[in-house]
Image (cartoon, rainbow, N blue to C red):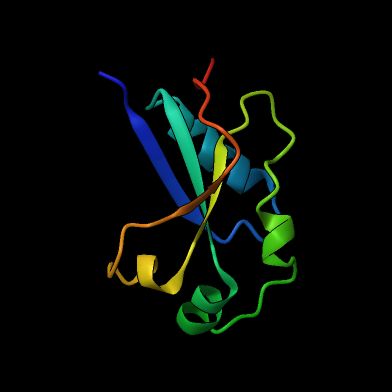
Length: 95
């Protein structure tokens, strides 16, 4: 059975904490999708405007086991829909 992981987050000003979160998530699945929350989600739920624009936050991080990256809209965050815009292609997470 294939396990697909989903790790939502702002991933604004990408740092070692983000890397550790993705690394731990990758260890628990065959495929990993990093759901980058949209600017409106950050503003509505955290009251902050991201420093890095969404288009740039959607760029996969330069790591050996790059996850698939997708944007998560307000509707997805609120549980009103399960649609996520995925950028990239699924690839097996390797150790």
